[in-house]
Image (tube, rainbow over all chains, first blue to last red; front, top):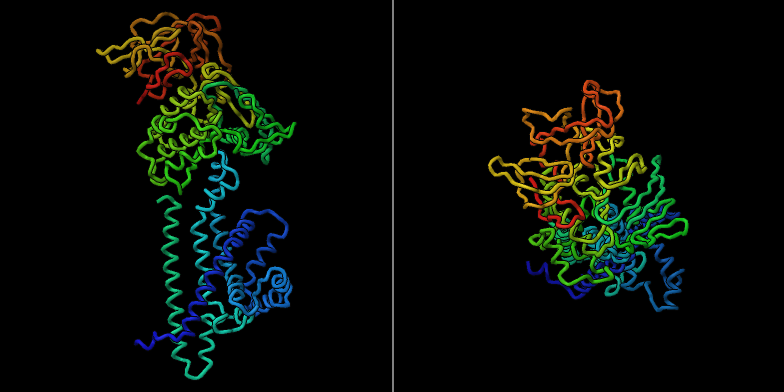
Length: 234
Length: 376
């Protein structure tokens, strides 16, 4: 069976890139995700339901469409992409950062939803109690709210990470399939099954993909359980 | 010194309450829905009244006319909530010290130990709230509020969610709090036994308004307030001092201004001060000093006031050497005995009528008050 796991350098690159893209997609979207979840859970403002719909849009529209919209917005000649490239030197188009952006957008609804649900479930009277003890809004958030929603944050992060590992349509549309730059596991597998004799390599990467995903889910279950027990004080 | 005047509308309910109170424990007493919790929430800054003015120790916390509203976190008002509201993710120690991070003055060295010791929670420090009993949780909640250096302590039905045994466990701690700390306490309750045991001042609330304010003993002896303070448990409160123990018969003599009371033996040192509630339904009236009667307590006095009623029973206030005593008789007895204000009578009370509910611990604010008073 040793031949099954004899990875070529290109395959190893795809695995490493996939993990890097998923990791940064998850981490980069986390602060924004928490902020948006807070807005949706506690904000009272005009256009709240519109924001909610926009956040959930990547879940329901075809990934190709999401990828195309990203291309229009963040491409070299895109509305935001041109500004970012000229003023800040940040380029997404056809870079691994673009893959991470596509994955972040696709995983965003899952991240926000998970955090928002745990925010909704919090006993806000605990925050009042912290207020009577002298804590200001910032301190209440850091010492009470954040620890209490930690299981929800962890769950959201894992979902976002897993979604990023599997992301295909938006990524390939936005940043194409460049080995070593934007070729992640799914796009690599897709390419391998298109070419003659690529079956074995495709199978190898498929197994790796399944292994990473299962590992992530197991780890998340354990983490979430631990965090939940901690929060409930058990 | 606390001064409160608040008007606030909550749906159909109008809270329109004003009172002033001083040191010691002020009880806000009334039925559920009488506006007690809304009133203390306004004091603590958790709700912003439509109109009103709230002062604690001369500091203006709310004054809608001058657009003053100090936020809750700057009020230095310790709040003990009905459900404790301990932070579930923190240990007991972390809960206790939470408010200290923000307290402007550090407090004396050893204060934390003193509070932990006073509340008997030293063994719980490493635990989390989920592993505490209801009584333990409330003691930790009290400690947490105290250690935030409050200038006023607000307690919203802190015993309501506990069973009788746990209540009996906590009451002595609240008494010690009242007697050992110089912090005034506002205590919300609908349980008359708690209020008569703990309160220095009583604020009776009804339908969002203050029906009466005054010293607890005086409020409890007002016949006109019985519909609000509770008919069944109505009774006078007497300040007493332990005068004598009779080991042979297992009796303790309590001295009051109205005369001596003999009650079942109490494990208290001579001279200890004690509040006693004598329920109106436990008092009988005789026109002559009774002879050949089993009851041990006979207090002479005069009829001071007879309540008005169309029902079968009548409440009357007696004046026993300046001490008010309440008696409940049938209307028929009142008529057949010819009881009218000014009439000299003898109040008869069975010793057995004094159950543990009748005693109220050391009287507040009196010199020599015995903080170790414990009962049943």
